Amino acid sequence: MLIELPCPIPYGPFMNHDNYPNDYIRGILNSVKTIALVGASQNPARPSWIVTKYLLERGYDVIPINPGLAGTELLGKMVYASLKDVPVPIDMVEVFRNSEAAGPITEEALALDPLPKVIWMQLSVRNDEAAAKAEAKGLQVVMDRCPKIEFGRLSGEISWQGVNSRMISAKKPVLSGKGFQKLSLNRP
Image (cartoon, rainbow, N blue to C red; front, side, top):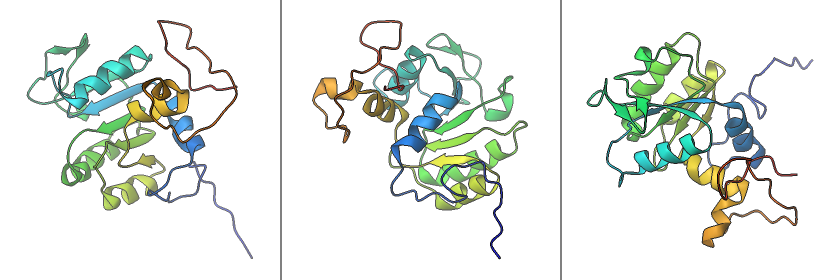
């Protein structure tokens, strides 16, 4: 007899973190609004600053987390020392720290009430133990990916730079409705 258990993750309780379906990534990027970016930098040359700026420009509420910058503003947003200091519910925790630090950051995220929906670990960041703990609590997890790159790839923006997005479509991309040359993830 087969018993089906309810599962909040559309691709099963434990994701194959070596290959994410486009619909999984698109679903996350379409559903989250508030992103806590752990490891935010005030240096415009750092990838975390670039990703923060990009996501803010795409309409996400990005909350920078950096204990050394706590109480200051970064790109017009208040910086907090830790996830527990953020006064609003967090949809996604983006880890811009190394793989070892991803474990304690995930533990801190799992102590939040309400829980975030997603733990996203930046390029070269992978912690399978932390991912398993988060998935066991019903969170979606992405590792070794960049939301800026994934948004650009799935919306078609990345192809403007001549990058192979691994997606072929004859359908016209949808403009996001604001700004210049910003595409939406909602492809027809």
